[in-house]
Amino acid sequence: MKVKIKLSNPSKMPCKSWDLQALDDCIGSKDSEGNLVPACTICYATEGFYVMPNAIKLREYNQEDWKRDSWID
Image (cartoon, rainbow, N blue to C red; front, side):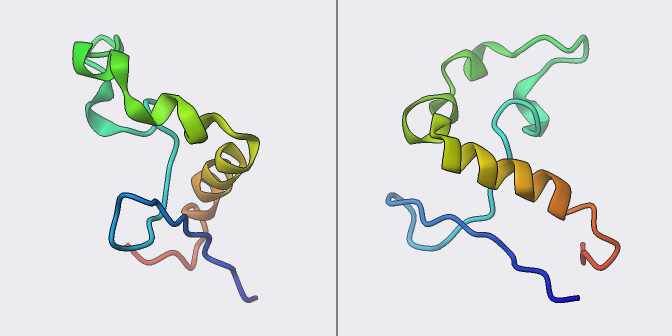
């Protein structure tokens, strides 16, 4: 089965990126009690183009894609 890897093309980076949802998948976004850390309350990835339906759909796809058995760590 051929799987299509979906990359985004951020304008402020010199390369493509493989995105996951901000805050939900960001390791450092929550403290040990599950509360959002202060630095993440103003996360750039929760506004602007990041909330567009196509951007959200891409991150949701990637969230499931990385669970494939053929995924390589």
